[in-house]
Amino acid sequence: MFDYARLPHEFRRNFLPAHLAPSDWGQLEKAFTSLENREIRSRKELEEWLGDESELSAAIFEESAVRYVRMTTQTGNNDYEKAYLDFVENVQPKAKEREFLLDRKYVGCGFRSELRKDYYYVIDRRKENNVSLFRNENVELEKQDAKLGQQYYKVAGAMTVQFEGQERTMQYMRRYLEEPDRGLRQRAWEASEGRRLRDRGKLDQVFDDLVRVRHRIAVNAGFENYRDYAFRKKERFEYTPEDAFRFHDAVEGSFVPLAREIYEKAKKSLGIDTLRPWDIFTDPEGKPPLLPFNNAEDLVRGCIQIHESVSPDLAKQFKRLRDLNLLDLESRPGKAPGGYNYELSEVRLPFIFTNAVGRDDDVYTLLHESGHAFHTFATREAGLLFDYRGESIPSEFAEVASTAM
Image 1 (cartoon, rainbow, N blue to C red):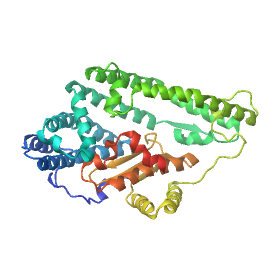
Image 2: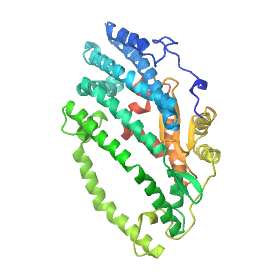
Image 3: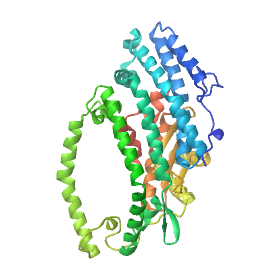
Image 4: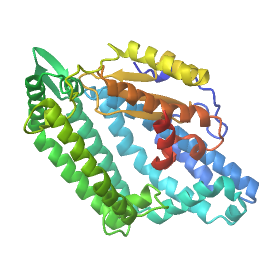
């Protein structure tokens, strides 16, 4: 179980007091004010200022990460929910407003042009983009966005199915869809979808509210729709929505016919007239599903062997995650769906979250998230937050390490 208190703090603070608690806005406010009021008289002082700003951001990001991890690993824990929402409501909005002032100070600094372009180009473009997108009225809307996300996790994390005499998570129900017995697959699919339908009203409301909130955010920032706003917010500077549409058309023209061909072959192999949703994941030759591990310990041992075959250094890093309880891998009731790697930006260590149930896909998921974790280890000695914090890296590049694994 995740225990933040036992994690080693190998990177000392230089600007912030060691005792500063990022959950206390009064303490954070003093740090923001100090950075806002500091006079910058040279390129060197600007670089030092960026380092101190990075340290402040890391402290805030880590506090947010810890609360997010606790909330998603135990969505039914009222204390964790309250702590997460308290940070979302009472710290993050104030921090965003003050972060904008720091970004604006940087953009207006005369020594900005003297910074090394090969090193500072990414952060320079990011801060300029942040300033152009920021609107005070969106701070409250972004708070609503985060709270709606938490509502989704709470609803989805509580979903279980009584099936074949056992209470199963929605993730576990996927195992049945790989079984050769078509009747079992159909019953499992109908039980799973029936359970989701019970919460259709709640989930539809969350989705509708998110659409409304995000559209208002986009309009406030001067965009016609959230899609165009999101491209800028996610720093997709090198391609446009039109490029994405052209890619979609290429997929439709090349891969959709191939998918139809594959499904047609599967239908014939299964000896059925119509391919149903419960027929997609089973082996078309009727072979039993691969079940490569029985529990999280088996999964970790197997992945260590894989990492050893690639690089002993990777295996050593993965073992460290195991030893520090930075792996929460098994599906269970009350756990948010999905999988992620979340970087703890002050201790500069990754946390991996998955919903493993023994399926072959679970191995690939953990290997994928391990790639993100290795990215964190590879960059943790870097100086500035934008260098080592995975979330600060555009997703198109962040996924390189994970996909490579």
